[in-house]
Length: 171
Image (cartoon, rainbow, N blue to C red; front, side):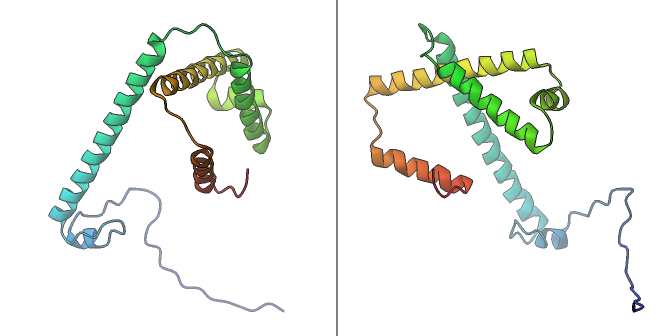
């Protein structure tokens, strides 16, 4: 009923000592993400790429620091009703769904994956929710001061852009 088969294979590498290819022109020409022909050309292009990434990272860090300074210096008279609780509920729902996808309870996920107890988790989620609400309140305050508005068309275009980027077809 069965048939006999014969296979020939060549084993190029067995797990063990790491094989690091030599950085030469042939290696550089074989790189998929670069069209360089020489090692020197590759080094120049790669150095520029790294510098651009570093500059973008540093700029983003500066923006985040400035924003956090604004949030921390602003005076808040409290949180809008239900906002913090809404953010906390959203985070808990997301983590509960993630836990269920792995066959865990929320507590099993938090203890096992994040190495913290539920009390610490709940406190951190609440602090992040408060920070998020402060950020949103500050954004709205600045937008009001500067007369910045968003039309319905602009809002819907942005929603569509986000939906497209995450692969959603409708709200």
